[in-house]
Image 1 (tube, rainbow, N blue to C red):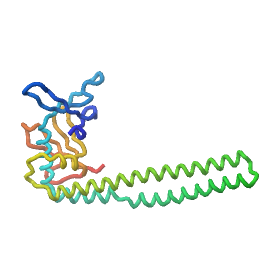
Image 2 (cartoon, rainbow, N blue to C red; image 1 turned 30 degrees about the vertical axis):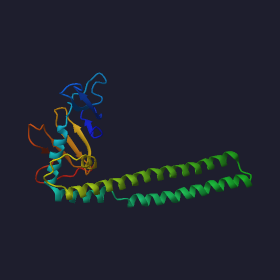
Image 3 (cartoon, one colour; image 1 turned 90 degrees about the vertical axis):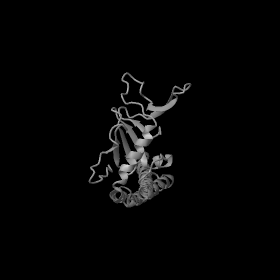
Image 4 (cartoon, rainbow, N blue to C red; image 1 turned 135 degrees about the horizontal axis):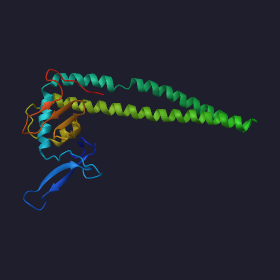
Length: 227
């Protein structure tokens, strides 16, 4: 769970610790890895295996709005995961890259076969190289954005399928489900947990001895936070 638990105060990850390792009271807890670093200690509490039960409660709360949630996920896919605009920009930059490369080759050929002013030629040559490099860097950046959107689309598709097939009476913690649909879980100073699902939904869960769960969304509707 460590890779998903985040301190709500400093933003650092939680790590597992063993308490009472040589006693019958041995148990594993998770606490902020940076809790005792620096002058100011993080006030967020440690958490125990009860995180798993809270996850089940948070996940169950999502299923109350299953149809609306899937609808919003589909809308988010169309809005956030499309790549047509990126592909159009890539095509333009590819053309710019080819043109700049052509100008570089022409400049080299000109310098080899004609008498040119060195300073003028160097200035032009450098300008062509700069154009080429900017195009290459722009293409690399857009390719990363394209990959990120496609990865997000696949991630949301898997999320949707699990929501559609999920059993409303899920009672056992499943590590695979946890990894698949949880982006992160923020541990707040008062002990509440904020579950951030990979579709953008956030669900807040209080201590188990208090209310079973409390979703930050209104009960009447599910509001997707896709920003």
